[in-house]
Image (tube, rainbow, N blue to C red; front, top):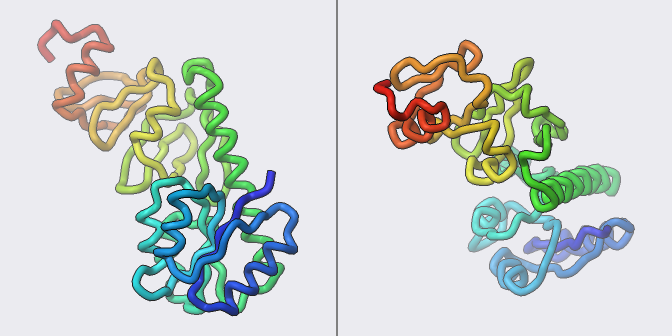
Length: 242
């Protein structure tokens, strides 16, 4: 499967180089090139794309700000002549960050990362749409630039920290770029329960309830008032005074 690519850069020479690189790569297909983010936004409203090569420093709307306006889950590879923008680019969960002038070898490395991430998304979509979550015993998580297959039984709890989630397992902690809203569609309801705006815990790992806290494998987790009734009901304790 070829990745449909969009090139967005206000410099004609920079666009020309990327267009040539894309044409030399069999796994990529150029669908459009734009001179600014606003034109790219107009294009994406009516046309599909998988991967966008996006300049960070552009007039009117920067690349990093443009990414925040996207409503579809595009893979993003940032490009720029200014290395000081690298941290900002990676905070946007970009696949990679290319510093101009871009060599073909470095370009291919970034494309390989994008292809890996596209395959990861495809597998996650197939898992979500192909079967009930309760039929699976694992989840695929992308962390540290790797794809981890994690068994549900190994997960203690999930902790939300802004745009990221810490996945606390028996032997490690993974940090993923995800929201609780999306995560809840990927984990089985019979194994996990949300007990706080920032915590989802493994139901089987709950050892005791102490007031407005639950002990999960020795870790005290707060229980929010709006979630307590649901927790007690699941534990068949709603009728008791706790």
